[in-house]
Image (cartoon, rainbow, N blue to C red; front, side, top):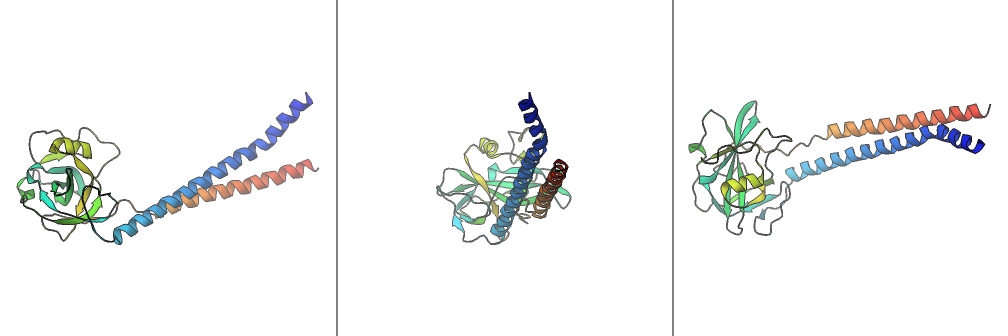
Length: 240
């Protein structure tokens, strides 16, 4: 009976410290994770601003975000995609995604030629481009997307250009009738046949991550101080 009482007494006495230690470890891990996220975004910003040497897109090309690239081939003007609901400066518009047939790959390269305003009519004539060989340059990027899409990406499967709401690569490949590379070339601003191209790296706000890290570390320190104060109080009681 006495043994059972002692175990219960010890459990009751040290349980808060065990729980507190677990919480402190969790808060520290979360703080470190936020610092790691901030470091990733600093590296992303650096790679965007200092991209390095351009490489040619070919059969064995490996996409690295914001890597400068060169490609040789021709635009397939008859099978273009307009990504809808893209807002720039408070105005709705489209990203013009043009399939590009490479000389050295069976997969099509998707080229984001930039943003155009939405005027109420599908701007088919505005986005037409010649079909001759046209070397291009740009950066490696990705299709824009959202966490939750309201419905199907494509509702019209007959007319070109096709209007799409946040499509993925497989959906675009199904519409154009050929496999596509799993990245997008963001056409350089000085390249011809483009539209508004003020490319920016995706979410690189590091301040919020540093702020979250500070909060997690502050909570860990507060718990540590509270645990130390509680331990001293219990020890003082036991010595009376």
